Image (tube, rainbow, N blue to C red; front, side, top):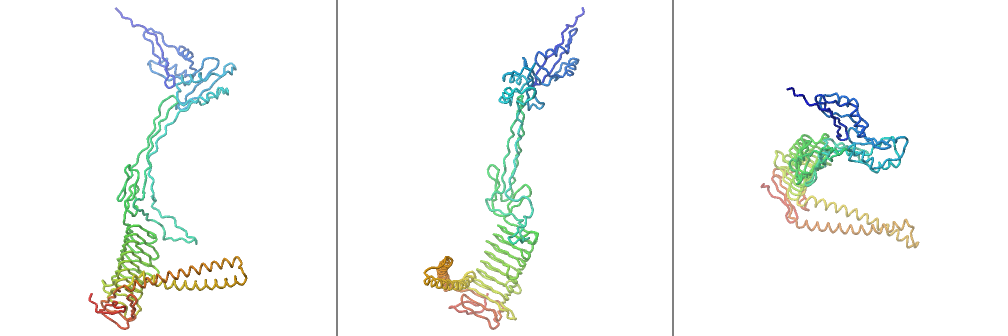
Length: 543
């Protein structure tokens, strides 16, 4: 017995996917009737779908597989006397409405009709109802108007680092002075910080803000990427790892990612036009020389492995050590809060609150020490010419020379106090001169006022100024004399210093111990000078 296959008519299904129209055509079974294109068109008309791709429909009908095919451009019609067409953009970020009157009827549709059409098109987000009302109120027909907008996603910002120092290893622009000149030594290559200074901050990441299409489809956003703050030596990082601060004072060292603070600044080579002047708030090591005309200043110790050549070098809190020599022109200065050490000194000016130790010789220089000056370790150990002042002691192998070069040695008083006393005497003389002028002006103008009964405004002003000057200078002189008197009293209690000569001291060497003075008339050897009962006495040098 032959079993005949049951016949089944073909059928189709129309689906909406995010307002797109999809058609699925299922072929017939056996002797069943095939789906015709007109069948589909009638259904589209019944569902008020007016924008479709006839070629896509035809291909779907003729196909042998029942698979969904996109056939529509998402256009819908409002039933009634007019037609409302909704279009959704391909990226689903905009939806437009175009109202077309039929047979010239300009009656406006209702807001709800438009909203229903939008809903039928799958538009559920970003609808501007106020704009739709304006379209209807103003009868804006035959013109597509965007009535719904999606929200694009906003990607988050990646973390960034804000640096509080110059990350570009470039010279600073040359500064121009008021007179228009430019100092090419000021280039500012070294960047310094204090302990606690902020070096860098991380600006945190932002999370992305997701977007939404007009059809309600979420649009993901990309979160910003984080970044790590890299800390090096002598750098602290806070608990949430967003800020770097200096743990010590010193120089910023930055390799492009990691930050360090080095309390010791090392100059590989000379201080010259390549480096510019050096200003550092820590310790400083210079492998070469300090060239003529340059300035080197540091808070802590300064070590120079070469020479200082007619330059200014100062340690504000530490010592200055020069493995070579110091050569100047008398106007330059080497200053230290603690010690100064050098191989030799020539035509230079040195000032230290501590000892000054020179290996070979000091020639024609001005040297001030708050402690002692020693020139004993080298083969020569000589002091020749210039002025050497120390609070406690000056000790050398030889002082002066056979040519009888004038050499001044002063001990027993702190050079700063001695300098202040000399300055006070000078200031008193100047103040007395100013007082004499003021008294003369006061007397002259007073006599004029008594004769005529009054003075012109200009002369009255000069009269009052002269009186003020007289009072000020009188007060200044009184203060200076009192200060000088106090210093003199302090000197009376000083026990004095010592001048020691291991080998020879030559004629025309002028020595001063506290206030007592003596000039050598003949060569002395192995001798030590000191103060006794206000005068200078001597004894054999015993080391």
